[in-house]
Amino acid sequence: MAKAEEFYLPDDLYYDRKDHLWAGIENGMVRVGLDQFGQKAAGTVAYLKLMPVGKVVAKGRAFGSLEAGKYIGPLKAPVAGKIAEVNQEVIANPRLVNTDYYGQGWFVVIEPSNLKPDLADLAHGSEQVQAWLEAEIKDYRDKGLFPAEGT
Image 1 (cartoon, rainbow, N blue to C red):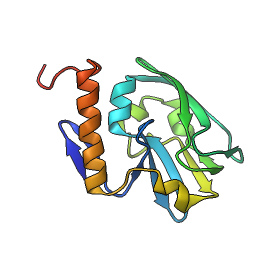
Image 2: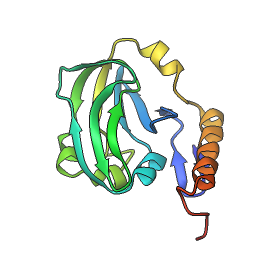
Image 3: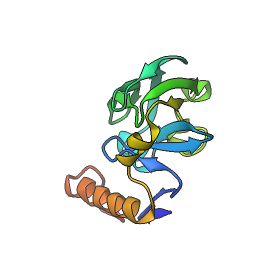
């Protein structure tokens, strides 16, 4: 598990370095959510809109949108495919994104159409994810987006 300061990112997931979405592979399907770092950067999630089951989405294209304290914008698919499941629980209770980001706070399950090449672009494995997480924390602190540790 990658861990730095208060952040942790499980090793078994794949991570979109730009949008902080995680992708978990389950029986050939891809469950997608927002990682711990991303939810902290976005702030308290107030509203989610997700595309319906059956909708085809391209990698890097929006499958929904998120409104939070510090972020309003699209949620971009880490893999291409068809939306197979939408988490109705997180739509009804968007705060799950902040409180259970690797559990009940997931967004959609995608039936991938190009899995292996799509996963190649995502951060995966403890060393790669650890280096990326540490760089992201430093970058956000340098920009003043997160207060210095201990303040």
